[in-house]
Each structure stands twice: as structure tokens, then as C-alpha cells.
Image (cartoon, rainbow, N blue to C red):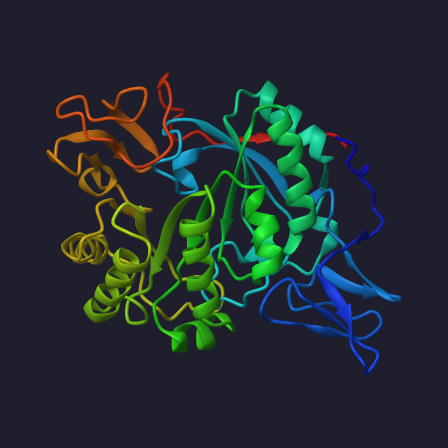
Length: 363
């Protein structure tokens, strides 16, 4: 593949159109930012330059790191494998509770010290023994051109690709973006539009549309994460409603992760999430029919265990991101009753563990 060389110059962006009043409109996400000369979109990284829109972070990263795939979190996508993770800067949401705010809210392009072409990233993943490359830390939707080119280079080397995203993207660019992905973890931040509007500056419905599209019209393996914030999105009624929607619209087999919040960024007055809150949410979702429900950001063997949906035997026991026991067959079946477990599985060669290995990649 002949992808563009890494350059410090702004990269021509896609998905925009001119408006009659002289502005141009970004068509990437539902924000529909309308830009005059020199203005940036809400994501900060897509900017008008002359009569075009450019992506200012193509080929530039806030850093590369090898992680366990369970950290994304993905529990049913080649469990125990390692993933080369990276992000850029900026975000198209304005979450007051952002847990990666130093990256996603960054307005300092100088912090993007690592430069790498799509081919260099694919090669680094291959030589590091990583099963996949994850576009994460900030939302890859806003650097879709870079993510798609990198995914193409990765696939040429037999490397899988993962999007960790809020799913806030228009349908047309979404089709192209997700066509380049093998797996996605979508943040379903809450199940009310009021929460989305007041705490993220966005809306719920486009995220639900993305989830329905991913599940019904693509081959992308999809898992869902909800960061539970006490007093904001953790009521029994909201968790019940969300779980019912998941079962009705996506089915019982989409894994759901409830993760613990810690006060950060602009939501410092909120309480941190206790293990009891996570366990309660897990039990509610399971009672509503979601087969695979996990807790995250806590030590919880029960909440980290994958059980057979037919015979209930534990198949993968985890402590945080570490696999303690793995009993699935190579093709993802229960060894006791033969039931198929939803997901993408292969030969298990031992878990990567909780290591986090920084990587430098030259341009």
C-alpha cells in the first residue's frame, strides 16, 4: 500500500462540504461544525485551511504502548493477547468526567511527540508480537483518515485492528471507518439524552445508531463499556432500561462492561464508584438477559470471569487485566458442555498480563 509519508503539514481531510455562506461544514460527526478560515472544529484537530478541511494530527501520536487486550476492555477478542495502543489529541465529545482528559482535551500539538507512518505502526506491532493495534486514549473517529490508513497497513501484515470509541459518527463516514476495524469497544456513557447533553455536549441516539449498525451490518466484534458515575447514571431504572435495549436491539451475546469512575477533570465533586455499585449493575444486567457482564477498574474475580451461558462453568477467570485460568477450546467452546462462546478466539498461549510497555516508533 502506498500511504502518505508522515509529514508535519496538515493532511487533507475527508467528509466535508462547502456552505452557501462561504463556510465549510464538517460531515464526520453529528456536531456538524461550520468553519470559517482558520477555525477548528469542536474536536480541535480538524481545521479549515483555505477552501479545504485538514487533519492536523495525521502521523502524530501522544505515545505508543503495548497493553493487554483486556484493558481496552475486550474480553471476547483473542483473550490474553497483546495490543499496540496509541492515540493522538482532541475529542469530539466534551465529557466533564473524562478519564484521559490530558490527551483528549489537549490543545497543545507539541505534546504529540511520536511520529509514525501507518506502515511503521504495522511493522512495530508485528515485530512486538502484538495480535492487534488499538486506536484509543482519545476517540479515533476524529483522526479517521489516519486510523483507516493504519488499519489497511496492519491488515497487510496480518494484524487485527481495534477502535475504542464513543461511537459518535455520521453514517457515511462510519461505514468506511468501521469497515477498517476488526473489533470495537463502544462507550455507552449513559442511557438518557439528558446525561449526554449536560455531561458530554452530545446526544444519545447517534451512539445507539452506531451500535445497531455495528451489530447488524458489519462483522466487527463489538463490546460495550459504561463508566458508572454514582448519582448520575447508576440508578436501577437506567441500568434496567439500558440492559433491556441491549438484549432487544443487539441480542444477549454482546459483552457489557461496567467500570469504576474516579473523580477527575471537571466532575471532581462526584463520588468514586464502589465495587458494590458495579456488582449491583452487573446483577441487574444479567437478570435482564445480558449473558456476558463484567466489572472493570476493580479487583473482582466474579465480575471478571467469563462463564458458559449454558452450563455456567467458569471458563476464563480474570483479576483486573490478568487471566488466572483459561479453559476455552481453541475455537471458543466450553470444554464441559460444548457450547459456543460468542467472540473471536484462537490458540491460547498464556496471558500477556497487566504489563504496560511504552514503545517508541520512528517515522
